[in-house]
Image (cartoon, rainbow, N blue to C red; front, side, top):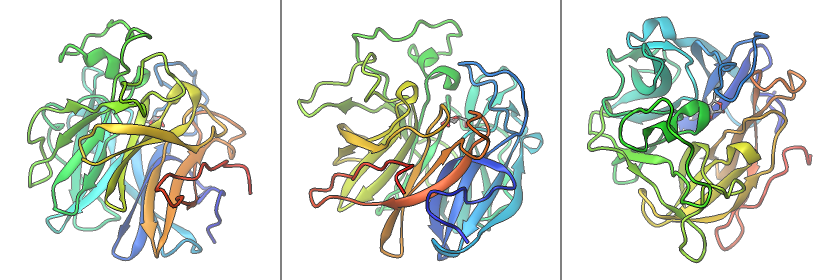
Length: 324
Ligand code: FUB
């Protein structure tokens, strides 16, 4: 049986869960962490994932099923390594798996693969999405059927290397007193396989309308964007990376701007934190990961979930992952 705040599976290490309700069940699209003891660095070389396993749960109390390997890097013609945090979407009677990986030049790009089933297997397109770069795709199919991809991650995710519009391997970090880099958003074409136009940077501002600064590590965007809607508002949530929190900002438009609101999840065991938010059977759930099962090894993580609650004004109640 699945239980809140416990690993939903323990036979493999899983991370970066993107949860969706498809065909009346909860489907979880996680990264599959490899169990290795190689070195760790700020470039994220320890995150050596090679494939994806898709998980599902009939409901929040049911056992979690592993549907097996859904896509392997060897079957992605353009990719070389590091199949990082994926997401999935359903449109045109097709399931789409979006995933970042390094291309043959070592540059992170975002690819797409398709399937008739939410559990896969998925078949990858020949090339990555033209104009895509960096990591952590999250896709919202809005109520009007327009689809948006949110993506981008600092450090190992290379986002700060793209500020000129080209990849600059030795680009300097953003000035700590200047605006922080936001995540990117791109509308997807009707067939869900390409961007309609170039990605644009999302603005995240404080309550006074001032952009969050790059040095504001408690609140600024780092990686792992997620978009959900609640009472007609758009909620952009993300990881603050170096301060290890999941935080959120609210806006009226899927492309922003978004006003910073607060913390969803306080730090978990392990360096990274990454999540998704999904409504299922009239409750809201936060899917997240930590490294407790491996005794705190950053790249051996496990997906967990817990209920997420809103206040009457639409703000989210902060969750302590270890307050059971
Ligand atoms: O899992 C590899 C990377 O670690 C993800 O892409 C990031 O969001 C972080 O969780």
